[in-house]
Each structure stands twice: as structure tokens, then as C-alpha cells.
Length: 87
Image (cartoon, rainbow, N blue to C red; front, side, top):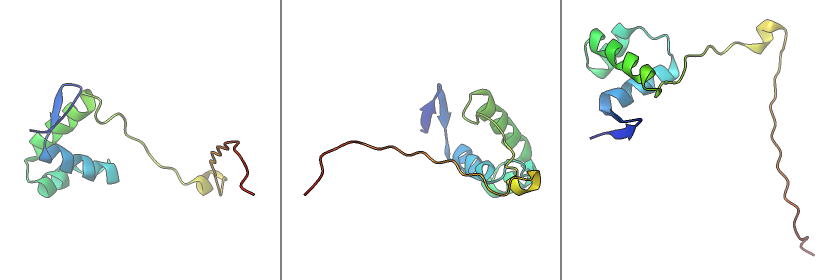
């Protein structure tokens, strides 16, 4: 049996689908079906269920910053802890 998230069991087919759509969420269902060994309709049902249950929480597009006139975007998080100095 799979891992339960929000009362939903994830099986090997779901994991394989999630791995593929994580890389490219625009991959045609026909190709996904070939890769995971299911019918196209079964893949579409599973993806709908994964979205409905919140396991797939969104579909995004990654936009190249340079195409918007922003050649570089840097997000930095720095945490500093004050401590004793070693002499």
C-alpha cells in the first residue's frame, strides 16, 4: 500500500506520474501513459485526482528573467548566530 496524504494512497503509478510531471507538466497524457504503463484515460483520471486532493498543488511556468529585461535575479537568505569566539 502507498503513502497516505490527505486520505489518499499514493501508489507506484502515481509516483511515476508525479516524477514525470515534476520535470514537465505539459507532457502529453499519451506520452505519460506510455512511460508508466497505463491507458491515457487512466493517466488523466489520476492527474485529476492528484490535483483535486492537493498532492499536485499547482502548475507553473518558469520564465527566463532575461526575456523580461532582468538578466539576473538573486534571492539570498543569510542567518547569523552570535556565539563565543574561539581564541
